[in-house]
Image (cartoon, rainbow, N blue to C red; front, side, top):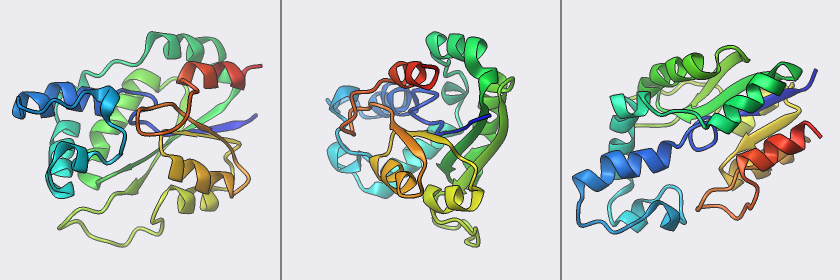
Length: 191
């Protein structure tokens, strides 16, 4: 049975879009940046703020009820119900430790029937302890040694995973060059 390792934010949910529309834009009504114009991730330069200010806002959103209410795409849920048992599924996210628990709860609520593991690589934040053996998703995937497929929205993560011999899929987002939607990727997996 093949194993798929999934990024969560901006692959299995619309984290950046929901954060922008429900958190950032209400707090900064003069901001004219639309989701489709987020051509860099992180988008702090496009927003005209420091990276720290952007990350603080994103992390507050990740802990919010708005983040908890994000709904998975109905078409993705249909795919999981039809084909999910054909694969092993592992969630792999890069988040600060304090925001991991809500992500686990979200995943279990929506995808708990299919995912066997939830893993994370801690994103560095001031005041958080170091000491995790994996600096990034590449390190984790190298240690895991079991991924057949890896789906992420970061071109860097995809490039690094492909060098490990993993079949990768870059999920299209405004900040990357992919034209493959998640539905395109899912169709490819079951051909």
